[in-house]
Length: 171
Image (tube, rainbow, N blue to C red; front, side, top):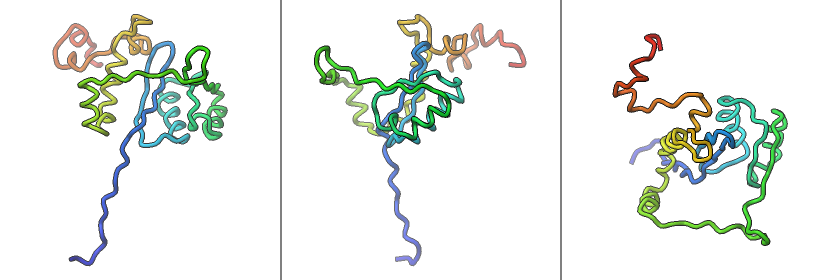
């Protein structure tokens, strides 16, 4: 009908992958979702989520993914004097076959399958939950081990509690 530029809808790539980094001591987790994970993405992730927030790590232990074994990422780690270690996938004792993973069919997984692509929107809430839940190995939350104080939950901001009412006036 019209004589103008034709508009086409660009499909936004669905986020299918998640990059997860865990601090072995505190069990603190950083994670982001991606449509594809390239070496450049890992480099930006480590800079933004690890170095800028927590300081330089001594070592990064990865699986043997190509984004971690690439010359680009190896050069990045070398420039910051970060030791890069690759580990082999879990295997059965005595065989070279990968250890099988079990998948359970549950109502939650069915719901997740019905909402394909939406899981990435829930990632921040999942990370908050993980960071504020005590770990069995430490009997502390990752938040407490990282910051030296328990996290104040969003409900504490709306319901007056001891910590909220005893804050200094300028805080």
